[in-house]
Length: 262
Image (tube, rainbow, N blue to C red):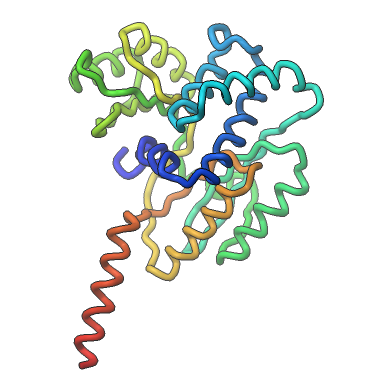
């Protein structure tokens, strides 16, 4: 599962500015609304809501905001109906992109998604045009602690039905079949694991590499998706180098070309 770290994505969200955090909280608020509509406002009896709450906490959403979102959803949900929409398309350089949305206006959202693809060198495709390049997996992120060693976490998860365990510096990432995620999560919790998030995601089977110019456009497209309140998740198969590393490489190339010119 190397290269597909869920925790890396969570950390990137946690490092965003306050304005971006507000955008993340808005997206999570929509997920809470849908979860409450489907299973009620008690997370003890609504596993989907419990998962969204864990995701909210992993993104540093204040408890007051979470509680307010749940109460608002329980009292006012009849006025807003969010629909799940999934779009597939091609990014620049032949990359594959899947965009998951929660929207109350399909025409608006479809138009926005299409425009982002087109503006940055890609195109919106048809259903299943790129999803075959991805695997659908449950991804459970657990806090690392002194109570559970790497071997114990791996053995526990695999025995509970998980497919794989990725050990990160601060967390364990447990990968499951979508239908097994709740069972594995329950077993982890019963054995003292602290769950930070649990979601079903699209994981790319193979990664593609873009040149520097293409990477700039691709990152800008991702930023546009992230800034759109209707967009909940974006999955892709592009190998995105660390921003600092990429900048260092660019600076080094500039220095070499400058010395050559002299």
